[in-house]
Length: 116
Image (cartoon, rainbow, N blue to C red; front, side, top):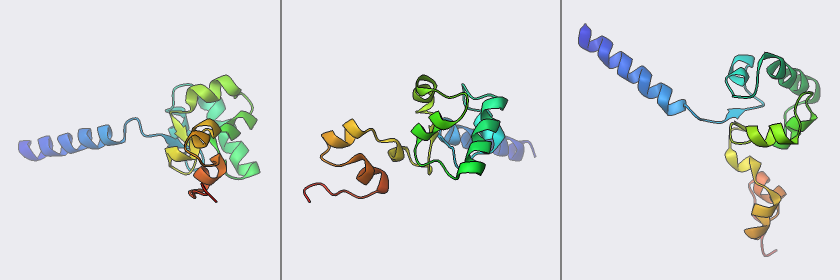
């Protein structure tokens, strides 16, 4: 029995570490998940949920600036902690895409129209 509990404990610790640091999807996160992000408390988490309920899903992390309580500096601080659609690639900056020879919209859409 002791061995079983040790295995279960080790598995839980491993699973916790596996998910630690993963960006939170603004379109799918619960209030509790949003509150787990440093810089987002209960009031801001509720504002995010109310905004997406009223206006539909976020198209980019930058859309967070449209939510009451979030300005450009706070969105920039959260950029590594949140995502839209579950993929970090959705947060590609236009300058990064230009350097790669693509348009930011093409990168976000998952297409590469470079050279066309």
